[in-house]
Length: 244
Ligand code: SF4
Image 1 (cartoon, rainbow, N blue to C red):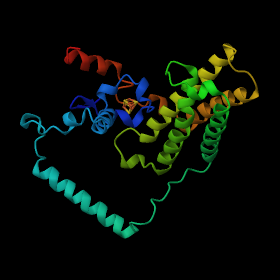
Image 2: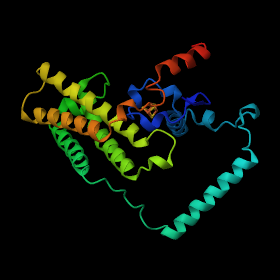
Image 3: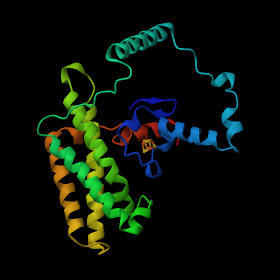
Image 4: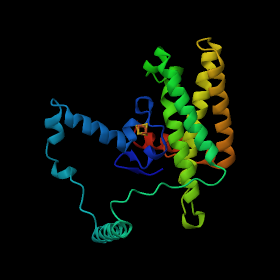
């Protein structure tokens, strides 16, 4: 786990995006940036946000080699864009043959649950992260997005060309987390007799199918270590070092 300026590097790449329910808000650069942006829009906080940076808080200038490297990368990226035609849309990556069904069914689950939620008032309104209704509501949108990212990442993967864990495994793991939490939330409602009926059974069945399919396509996803989230010992050491 890398920590820079108090933030866990890359933690936001493999989270579920539910900041309201996240234990790592104070360690997340994205969360800090969002808070700063919101503060800048608040007239009461604007003077604080706009206050000049104190000399001791100024970051040091980048070393010359780093600046040169960044300039080279910017030039190469600009050239590349020119060659491909800047106005052309970024080509959508493909999914490997045999994997389309997972993407289709993840999308279909999302659309069906969305329609169902619109006809079940209390479900759509709940945002309490401990409420199974909110869990279902949050993850039905996240699951297809993470599934698509994982499948397209896998299709583009070149294991010989990387030395770091596969990014698609991280996305697949987040999809699995969402699927399993949603599955448990639906079953909770059934056992509490809050909901009954064929639709719910279909949702539960679809989630179980997607879970098994992700385990099959991404057999190493569960072993992926998400920065912060899957590193309790590292976190304990960090907190101890900071005297928290
Ligand atoms: S890591 Fe937590 S705080 Fe940061 S974006 Fe993800 S959910 Fe939000």
